[in-house]
Length: 214
Ligand code: SF4
Image (tube, rainbow, N blue to C red):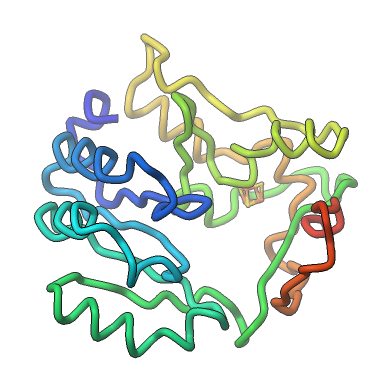
């Protein structure tokens, strides 16, 4: 990414799962800052572990000017004042991200059936490009689809996951690849997603496919 964009990336977000569970987070922070000196670098977290992070992680966040984005969910709202106080006392820049349409709701947009023949690229095409294990894709939903297919024994189209180490990769080719819609977009209704209420499904032993599909 540094080579093809000359280090000129506006924003990089370290996401999970939950980044504060990653034992190598300090190294990720250092490597990203080393290669992207001028980028906005964020950690995206639910904040539940933020108050107990190790001093070395806190030091890495502060010294590398990392912004901590905390997604607004009901469980972390109870900790909000403590988290803000902790951040202020330690000089950490946090951002409380309201990412739901309504309080306590969340959206899903993927269907097991093709919904439309042709779609325009949704806003994720340029705002949530995902990089994972040497690959890049236009959105996280697509990037993790092979795992989804394998786990639930389905065969949704996963075209559109590209090799970041392609020797012929240029900035133009990268942008072209993540700007067009992919087959999966035909199965994805971002215009009218299904809104679901946040809940704790503690009695459920394993995830079920309906958790993701509209
Ligand atoms: S799969 Fe859905 S979320 Fe991803 S780019 Fe296509 S329309 Fe957007």
